[in-house]
Each structure stands twice: as structure tokens, then as C-alpha cells.
Image (cartoon, rainbow, N blue to C red; front, side):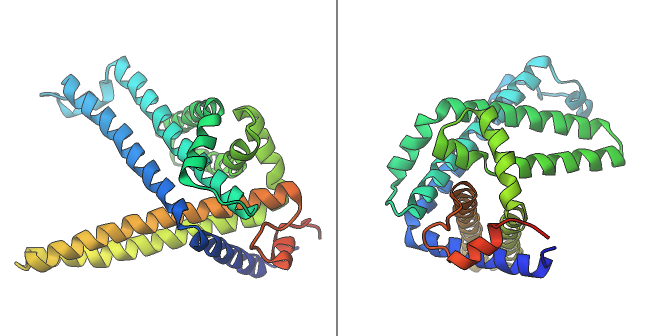
Length: 288
């Protein structure tokens, strides 16, 4: 049985290797920015449409429990649109990362062109993801504490099983169902580092962003309330920009890591710029 400490250490080194790849191609950072902007437009458009409909005008608090059917239909469409935008730009980003690991020189334009060529599969996967998300959320709201824990576990299992769907869509152009099935199969070759490495990226970036928000935004707000607006407002602005930057870097770093996991799981060869021994130890057969 593998030593859990050594597994964590390997994952940290793999994340560092992903960072080195990202530093060599800073253009990859533009794709998460575009994804975030498009997501804000989708959500903002839905909220604007709902507010313009007047459904909440002079409505009592319990109206949320009795929304008209069109509201839920629109909400599902919004979920699908949001998932589509995220998966579209993730496909472009991971596709560019795979190209970089193979020694090619991707651009934002070539990455977006790749995503456009996979648009049918991306839409299909967006519908599946939105459907699963809505079902799990609905069940969680209707079940007790134990039931919610079970649903949460199912959600985690779904996230893990579909971790490599986006790289498969980007690299192979399979349909959504075939990509989901293949992701589950490839997972067996990389399950440990898949979980620990990507979770490590998410947690690390979350902690950094949280610390910046707490110290910068919180501190700036106190200065503003204390009558030092000329100092507090710039601090808040810089802090917010820093948090957004951390989120962008985290998304790009996760994409490179995802591409590296996929590359080795498929080919059995270490990706370009990744240490041969490190990758073979991390993703080799999990015997004993």
C-alpha cells in the first residue's frame, strides 16, 4: 500500500511542475478570464430577465416557495448555459495545455477554435452536468441530514469520475457519454494523484484568496469606516483584483495538471517538462 505522505509529496511536486509549464505560457491565463466574464454575463442576464419580469414585485417572502413553472424552466436553461460556458472555455484551456505539453505552441485563437470544433459534445456534456447538478440539489433539499451526506458523497463521486472528461473532449472529440465512460476507466490509472493534486490546487488557491480577502478587503473596509477612505478604497480595489488573479491562476494551473494526468494515463509516457521518475511513480500501477 502506498504511503499517503509520499503520495501527497508527489502531488505537490506535480503541481509545481504544472506551475512551471504555466509560467512558460502566460497566454493561457486569458482563457479563465474570458470564462469568468462570460459566466457573469450569463448569470447577470438571467437575474436581469427575472427582475424585469416583475415576479418579485410586492411579493411576500413565501413566494420563493411557489414560483411559476417558467421560472424553474428558465433556471434550468441558465444552469445549462452556465455549464456550457465553463466547459467550453475549460476545453479550450485544457486543449491548449495538452498542446503545450506535447511541445506545440498554442494560442488563445487556436484554443478557442478547438473548443468550437467540439461544440456539440460540449453542449451535450453541459446538459448532462446541469441535469445531474439539479437532481442532486433537489434531492439534498428534500432529504434529512443523513440523506444530504449521501447525496454529497454521490456528488463527489461524480466529480471524481468525470475529472478527465474535458481533456478527453479536447484531445479526442468523443461524445459526452463516451467521454464520461472513458474518464472513469482512465481514473483507475491515476486516482490518487487525481484527487490529491487537484484538491490541493483548489485548497491552496482558496486559502490564498481567502487570506487576501480577509486582510485586504476587511482591512480596507475598516479604514474606510474609520474615515480613511482615500486609503481604504485603493486597498479594497487592489485586494479584489488580487483575489481575481489568484482565481485565474488557480483555474489555469488546474487545467495544466488535468492535461498532465490525462497525457500520462493515455500514453503511459511522462508529459513534456515533467520529471520521468516522478510521473512514473505517481501514475504507475497501484499494486501492493
